[in-house]
Amino acid sequence: MSMKFIKRIPTAEEIIEQLPLPNHISSLRNKRVDEMRNVFANQDDRFILIIGPCSADNEDSVCDYIEKLAEVQEKVKDRLLIIPRIYTNKPRTTGEGYKGMVHQPDPGKKPDLCEGIKAIRRLHIRALSEFGMPAADEMLYPENYSYLADVLGYIAIGARSVENQQHRLTVSGINLPIGMKNPTSGDLTVMLNSIIAAQSNHTFIYNGWEVDTLGNPYAHAILRGAVDFTGRNIPNYHFEDLIHTAAEYEKLDLKNPAIIVDVNHANSMKRFYEQPRIAREVLLSRKYDGLLKKMIKGLMIESYLVEGRQGIDENIYGKSITDSCLGWESTEKLIYYIADNS
Image (cartoon, one colour):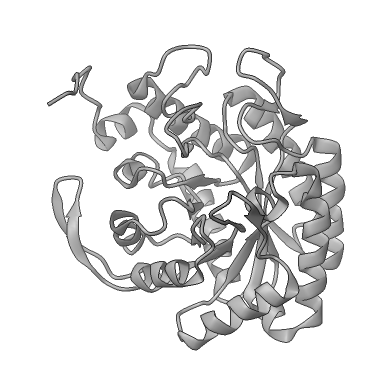
């Protein structure tokens, strides 16, 4: 075996014992998650915004960003439900590059997964405790979910993970809203099959246990655009794309059918500054058609304190070290526009 065993990773129980979630914060988190579920179950007509940095690379700057989000959330609370992005696990297409705080709690230092697991739990707890906003994270490693099971509000399954059996089965045992992205190829069948699997009950192996699951009625779709065999980005947020997706989705008679539109990635061709324009187009399509009005529940937006992106060694506070993001000034204007037009 060509592996070097470095050190044993503490169990979820051991990490949670070191970094417990206070009971009153747990109650606040559960109330907020109930509100999210109600939106997906058509019991709350607010529009969802899943918004924040491409990757959470620094605890202080992420929390400074979420503080600003919390202030805006209070002003638009009757129209929007804002879920901050705290993405601590980053998929890498070639395996190279920054893999998130769980790998490198300090991007300038060597990987340390043991400290990384503690760092991401501390960050999620701080966001909850100081701002009352349970966050969204990407499930890159299904076995790591248990370290954050009591703090997360929303989970996304990425375009490279959505066809993976272990991801689908794990989602079936989680009672949170979980978005299943279309794969990088754009194949809607893959995404819809993943939702079917996630909403079904299963028996499988998870973290050394044989487990049974009941299915997750809040598993839903995220449209993030596609990439063809030549590497060309193909968006899937236009009216015709949305109508086609909604119609195919509706045929399956799944529980709580819902679509979140990711306005960055292949939908924006990674031109972060196009996100406001795409958001406006989706909102217009949603107003125009009754099925879209019912099914499109929100948007996913990449945004940070400072617009654009930087190299890891540049050390600009609040600027993304992965994909480029909107800056705060543009973000705040966009949130108010969405609140007035959703």
